[in-house]
Image (tube, rainbow, N blue to C red; front, top):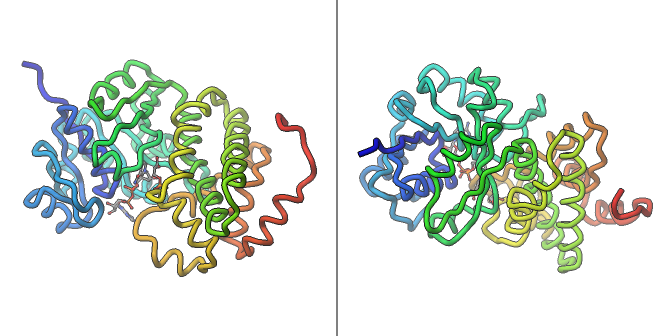
Amino acid sequence: MSKAVKAAVVGAGSWGTAFGMVLADAGCEVTLWARRAEVAEAINSGRTNPDYLPGFELPENLRATTDPAVAAADADFTVLSVPSQTLRANLAAWAPVLAPDTVLVSLMKGVELGSAMRMSEVVEDVAGVGPERVAVVTGPNLAREIAARMPAASVVACADETVAQRLQAACHTPYFRPYTNTDVVGCELGGAVKNVIGLAVGIADGMGLGDNAKGSLITRGLAETTRLGLAMGADPLTFSGLAGLGDLVATCSSPLSRNHTFGTNLGRGMTLQETIAVTKQTAEGVKSCESVLDLARRHDVDMPITETVVGIVHEGKPPVVALKELMSRSAKAERR
Ligand SMILES: NC(=O)c1ccc[n+]([C@@H]2O[C@H](COP(=O)([O-])OP(=O)(O)OC[C@H]3O[C@@H](n4cnc5c(N)ncnc54)[C@H](O)[C@@H]3O)[C@@H](O)[C@H]2O)c1
Ligand SMILES: O=P(O)(O)OC[C@H](O)CO
């Protein structure tokens, strides 16, 4: 009998826990690392994670610990699911205990502030591993729907296709269908920028701007994501796939999206501080809109929607003023 695949998951938040359930349902032995002892205790004794995924019973082959060395031991895959801006510090603490040949898997959809590095680049930098040891899982995967075992497709990206295929096998279940891709840059950009566009669509929804505005923002949001991707060497076809259009549509249409909800609250007139106060979990676009804009400027790419979101979220620009500015930009051909 072959040995079960072992997976460590760093971060027992909503997506770390839900993806841990997917791995466990696919037959892996999963150990979740939780920051707080009470979260680990609830998972081990109550089979639930009431703080992040209330109402879902967790599989028996998913355990939790607060000790990184226990979680990391012999892990074939070390799955990283913490807020993007904390990855560097979290992974630095894990680096000494990582299993020697473990594949590091990023679930995160953000870009590091200051360095403008994608999450896989931060992983390579901190863990000192090459791209063949780093994979990314991304796509239209709202954690609560996955935890309810509702059907979804996803993308498993790695520069080394055989590694992507191993991970694909490790997380393939009757309700979770992962596709492989070797375009790590495109997959990560799709995930990070859709959060920013999700904020923009949420703001528009909160302002009551209607479905034409939503369709326009989604489409032009995808256009600016693709422009950035092309400048960074991504395959443009990635953006019409699950990591691009798929995730953008799910995020921009779902009340389960934290980024969309964050934007809706701002569009309804809440202040930034009020919105932060009612947001219990990570809305990556709030910080990553600045690092995405930084990336755009480094690559000399025009990203007007991203710029508008930064203006509203970080510069106190009233949404009505931002809307007027966005709509009065000079006329253009669609494909440029
Ligand atoms: N929730 C989803 O539906 C979903 C789906 C796909 C991808 N993602 C991505 O997965 C990543 C993780 O998101 P999530 O939804 O699990 O977030 P979350 O807010 O639900 O959980 C974050 C987890 O990170 C832990 N953590 C570790 N160090 C931390 C620190 N210094 N500060 C704050 N928290 C810290 C928290 O304790 C918590 O367990 C994000 O990049 C997100 O974009 C989320
Ligand atoms: O809740 P959000 O906005 O972080 O979105 C969750 C996932 O990324 C959707 O695929």
